[in-house]
Structures are given as structure tokens and as C-alpha cells.
Image (cartoon, rainbow, N blue to C red; front, side, top):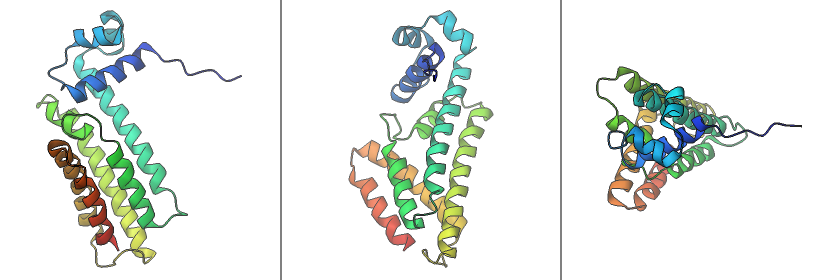
Length: 193
């Protein structure tokens, strides 16, 4: 018999704090508010997270792991063309848009985090560098399979694609114009043909 995955107080706090940090902002959310919304005692929260910064670090780790798993699952589908995987990947990344203040959870948390925290900046930087490297690998595979233009420089094209996705998420959120992401998908499909 399998054990059911029991939702712990730590899980509840992470979920509630993530939602509050993304929708209200890190600085605007107090630990007292997290206590009130989560119905988890302050003592219990501080048992798991020694500070608000430690809670933010755990949220970042969880978001990064979730996104990396989603990205890896799509990229590893070798039975699909590179173009199909790019379309799925783009759809997946743009569907993850939350009600976060900046349109993207990573942009939102980056702009809200303590500016003297190299740890947080490095986590987000490494996440985006990993995304760029993954897209670069996918582009190289597409070039080898003759599915993508050989002239496209893989690294700078990967940087462009990630920048375009992040920019489109922000612009769509700021302007409330869903056509921005649709236009990006169309334009990237043309670029990669």
C-alpha cells in the first residue's frame, strides 16, 4: 500500500507565501500576514524558515525546480521535431504566467528581493543561464537534424529567445494585451524555420 503524500505545514506556508510574494510583493508581505492567511502558527513557520529571506530562498528553489522539470520533460522528447518541442516549450513557459506583479515569477521576485543579496541574484541568474543553455542545445540539435537554419548562431539566438519570452510576459502583463505572446510565438516560429 502506498503512502499518501501528506501536505505539511511547510508546504502550506510555501504555497501561501509564494502567492502573496508574487501578487503583493515580497516587501509588502509580512510574516504576520503569512501566519494569518496560512493558519500556520508563527512558531511553526519559524521552525521551518528562520527568516523571511530563508522563506524566499525556499520559494526560489521550488520555482526553479518546477520550471527545470517542465523544461527538461519537453526538451527530452526526441521523437518530436525540434520545432514541435520549441512550440510546446514556448506554450508551457507562457502558460505559467501567474498573477505576479511582473508577469513572470522570476522577474517579480528579482525586483522585490533584497538588493544586497548575491545569493538570490545568483539563483535567478543561474536559472536563466540554464534556460539559455537548454535552448542552445535544442537549437544545435535542430541544426544537426536540418530542421533549423544553419546560419543562426545558437548561443545568441538562445539568449534572444529567452529575452523575448521574458519581455513578452512582462509586456503582456503590463498592457493586458494577450496578442503580445501570440505574436511572439508566431515570430519565433518564423525565425526558426
